[in-house]
Picture 1 (cartoon, rainbow, N blue to C red):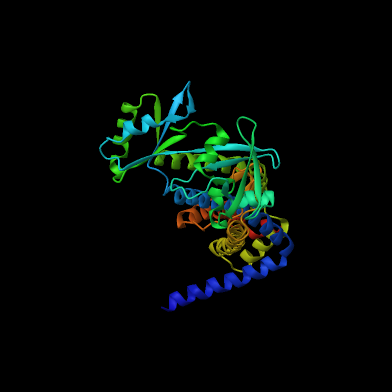
Picture 2 (picture 1 turned 120 degrees about the vertical axis):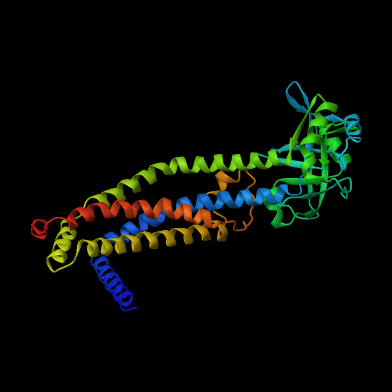
Length: 380
């Protein structure tokens, strides 16, 4: 017990001396803390935002169809006739199949594409529409206003806004217009009995691959897209966009690595003199290493905590204004929403090991070289 207390007392004295030593060089340490914390902030922001978007995509796709069937003509997606729908109704394991109507419409007013969709459950009266929150913000529209559209034949049609979708659904409904089947077919010129694609529901997840194989056998001119494939595509897209952000940051990361290595690999004359004096008054090499380990650990840990906390508030408190234009993917109608934190301990540990440990390792090498050198030679 006495030995343990002596060890704690020694560590406390080392920590006190380290704090006093860092205070004597506060300008340099503060500058390094700001640069180090800034790099942690950028890396953590990209990591947190990518993880949160993947989590949101998973929540959105949880209610997506198990399989989406599209008809291919000339290697491109085409409308699918109602006969294809009836051809699938007898497949074992398939609980529900229905045709969907959706498409894109370019609005020259805001120079953006809208997504028009007929809700599967209906409920939209002809001549009316329900719009997404970003679209309402861009057009300055509210319930009761009228929006005009030019159809496939050049004819103008008007839709009265009856509601605006809630802000909580902005990630999926930012540019969405819900319209009736009659208005949709009139705008796009799609004949009755034709659909954009087919949505399939399978109660048993283990049967999804078998049902997809039977769909392709029944409809050779079609392709089956599984929900798991859609989720993997979203993950790949978000990973790709995060890479686009990290590539420009690689120059800043390299600059920080050079700064940290220069600071760690080369001790200043004052630091060498300080180590020599400590060795001359009886400090052991291990004590000097522990003192410098305290210094590097305090600096890197403070930078890690500062950068991680700032990244958390940037992403989940302010909706990541520095990253949103690249990561969300909208060119004009950006959704305004708050992400749900989806941070795992593995991510925090990975960030810790990528930022703190390399700095500590680079710091100890030159200190060890100076500590094992004769004190008189070091001070000279």
